[in-house]
Amino acid sequence: MNDHETILAGLDAELDWIRDTYLDLHRHPELSLEEHRTSKLVEEKLGAFGYAVTRVGGTGVVGVLENGDGPAVLARADMDALPVKESTGLPYSSEVDGVMHACGHDVHVAALLGAAKLMADGRGAWSGTYIALFQPAEEVGAGSKAMLDDGLMTRVPRPDVAFAQHVMPIPAGTVATTAGPVLSAGDSLKITVHGKGAHGSMPHMSVDPVVLAASIVLRLQTVVSRETKPGNFAVVTVGAINAGATSNIIPDRATLLLNIRTYDTQIRANVLAAIERIVKGECVTAGSPREPEFEYYDQFPLTSNDAAVTEKVTAAFTSRFGADAVLHASPQTASEDFSRIPDAFDVPYTFWLLGGVDPETYRAAVERGTVAQDIPANHSPLFAPVIDPTLGLGVQAHVTAALSYLSEDASG
Image (cartoon, rainbow, N blue to C red; front, side, top):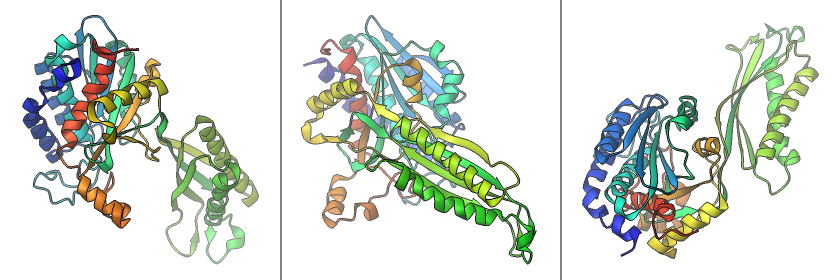
């Protein structure tokens, strides 16, 4: 029996409390930076497992298990829920009105706690340091920054490699990996443009910011279609325009809310520069009396997996789960803030996807060509990963990835 099998042989005996933890977390979701109950639960579990536990970034928790010489591996789970009213009808549905774990972070926490317990129990089979990091506020892109701002880099050992996983609407019992970009960079942008207010019957006395905003929206459509090389990925969405309050008053300003997604740092810079150039140019053309204002918020970094780490972890997954259970992940247009942590430490990382949909349900939807219609995606009020085998595989994935660096069987 190799090191992986030795440690993972204990999983069946732990699954009951791992499932109970998941159910408890699902019933009691907490919004970003309000994860107080969750943090306390995590602290108590890690302490009982023998980890040195540190609170970092308000509601963030880190457990460190030092076990002799060897590499340091950091594994991260996010903890926050969403302001979504659950509609799954499950017997363990959220008991918090208007809040639910609609993105699967309850799976992430329970799975990493399970992995932390197995790593602690199996210390005779590996050597090095295991760092279990539970991060708040991923949904608003603030949690990793909060932990870093609170001194994370000086309060835990420097890792040699970092891992994270995310449950997704792919078949349960599978994981999906890819080298390079796996999640897009995301930027939200509030633009305020200024006009000159007037009576609706006297448009010649105004500089109409509504017309200005409309011109900007139309012109922004050319950023991707005419300024981004065909084949390169970029999305520019205007999600909201707000101006005025009544029909017969031309307001003096308008605001636009934009969301931008990219897979490349240079393309991101080019797109943002083009947006600002277009907005400023349209304001000059309209005779705007003031410069436009740009406010960037909810910014998410690019998640781009290290090729060597991904190859090593994918090989470990394939050996453990079989080739049919290890899928190739297409880059996702969703965004995450996990990568800020390994980037701050300047260490490589890989981020994989964990299947959460009943395989037969997924297969049937594929055959009908109705996956998008029939399989609830993350952030849906109907999002509900199947508990088994999702949780068990999530635990195994974390342990398998860690042992690919920490066990005596690890090579390279």
